[in-house]
Amino acid sequence: MDRTPGRGRELTVGELAERSGVPTSTLRFYERQGLIQSRRTAGNQRRYTRDTLRRVAFVRVSQRVGIPLARIREALALLPEERTPTREDWARVSLSWREDLNSRIRQLERLRDDLTDCIGCGCLSLQRCALANPYDRLGQEGPGPRRLLTP
Image (cartoon, rainbow, N blue to C red; front, top):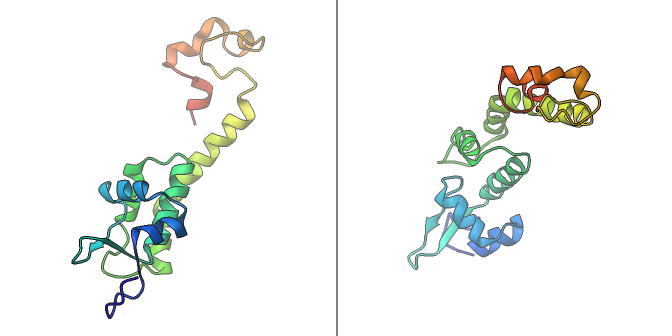
């Protein structure tokens, strides 16, 4: 750990990897993608502030629910770089994602609840397809599972 005054709360890439559960190669990837940042020591070693742990956790959880890295980067850009983000800063990020997350939740619920029925994909393989989508009429609305893609 760097013992320079004011830097005692910094983590090496190995320490960040161990505490976050993310391989060092992934941390370097996140850094290249602009999701996290480090400073370099005189010996060119990476040093991360402790609040980077929260950013990494945010990236991991967001990725796990299918949010693209570009969208994650946009959200992280709302956080201050010059200081540790506060609860209010994170609340601002949360508020900016609220509708997108609610929409994803609704879509996941529809997938869960409707997948055993006709989804309008055009396969006409389920017995119910002939009733719900006769002659693949939903195909005229466009490609894909029409009954799952529409709000």
